[in-house]
Image (cartoon, rainbow, N blue to C red; front, side):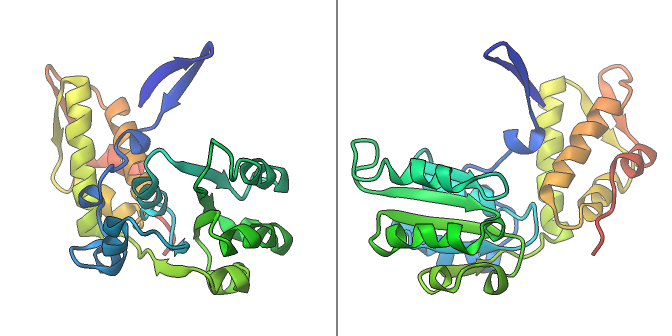
Length: 239
């Protein structure tokens, strides 16, 4: 991870955050909606962003894609910790110099908002002052208010395959080699194991690589990555 100081406090930036893709071409998996010519990719490239709900397992790229869409213009709320007051804070900026043309709101874990909280967004979604990108790990047809669903396009993010996860793992290893100045020497099957043991969650894969590099003992200018250590730092997800 990267360590930096913010207001006198040491802040650790995880490897998963450091390697978060900045372009659609860097996103692994989700070819069905993000591959060349796929519908979500064409929408993003057109710049005409509708209200959308992303749903699927954790670590499959929902937040990453929202960040790529919005760049620096995105308001973010996590429904597990946000309140109605946070919504009021955003809506108070509508039609002001801070948001003259409305806002793009990314609402993570929307299923944690109750019906009243979700309804509070409806007026602004209806008049176009808020363009909503919501994400959820739950089935949106059970957890998202019907009136929001009817005004949104739903995209399913599927579990990352082992083959796709391996690309991200190899990228993480190359990044850590550059940072540490050490050449990684993984035992046969180690990277495959980490890619498969993540259960399709890339965040877990990145965490495993980061811990593996921290725990490994350098031998000269090389860093052995053993299967024993890989098993120890990786917890297989329940399928």
